[in-house]
Image 1 (cartoon, rainbow, N blue to C red):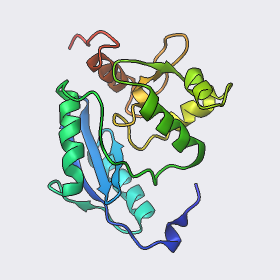
Image 2 (cartoon, rainbow, N blue to C red):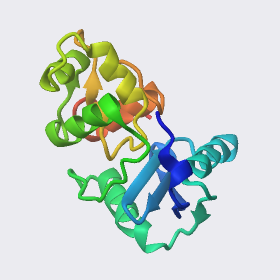
Image 3 (cartoon, rainbow, N blue to C red):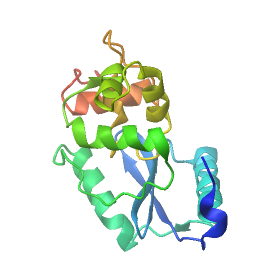
Image 4 (cartoon, rainbow, N blue to C red):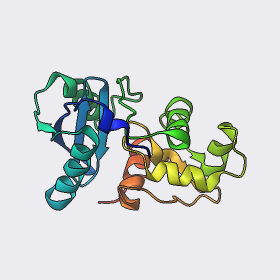
Amino acid sequence: MTDDSRDLPARRADWTVLDTPVGPLLLAATDRGLLQVAFHARGAVLRRALTRLAAHLGTDPVEAPDAPSLAAPREQLAGYFAGRTREFRLDLDWSLTEGFTQEALRLLATSVPYGTVTGYGELARRGGRPGGAQAVGMAMGANPLPVVVPCHRVVESDGGLGGFSGGLETKRRLLALEGVLPAPLF
C-alpha cells in the first residue's frame, strides 16, 4: 500500500467500542464514513488497532461514542445483531484499502446479499479474475470493515468456512444469524 498520507493533512477519526453477540467491535469513522470495524476490541487488540489508525490518519483517533459520524454505524450494527438490519446503508471510507483488495471488497458488498454465501473462486470470477481465489482470500483477510462488508459470506468451494479475521467461531455465529448455518447450541 502506498502511503499518500504524508502529503495530506491529518484527518480526524472518531471511535467507540460496540458490545455485540460476537464480542466487542471497534468502530472508527471519519467525515467520509465508516473507516474500520475490528473484532475483539479490548486491551492489546484495541491498542494495536488504534495505533494503526493513528499511523494511517496522521493523528490519534478520538474516543467519541456519541459522535455523529458513529450514530448510523452503531444503530445499523445493533439492528443487524438484533435481526432487523439485512442491508447496511452507510457511507464507507475506503482509504484503508486499494487496488485489487478494494475492488474485491466493493464487489462483495454489492453482490452477496444477507443470507447467502459465495466461494472465493466465484467472487474472483465475478471480478474478472478467474483463478484468483487466493487473491480474493487475501483481500477478505485484509477487510477493514468486516460485518458491514460481509467477508464472512465468502466460503470455500467444498463447503468449508475458510478463514476469518474474527475467528471461525465468529464466522459461524454471523452465518447462523443470517440463517446460512444452524444456530450454535450455547
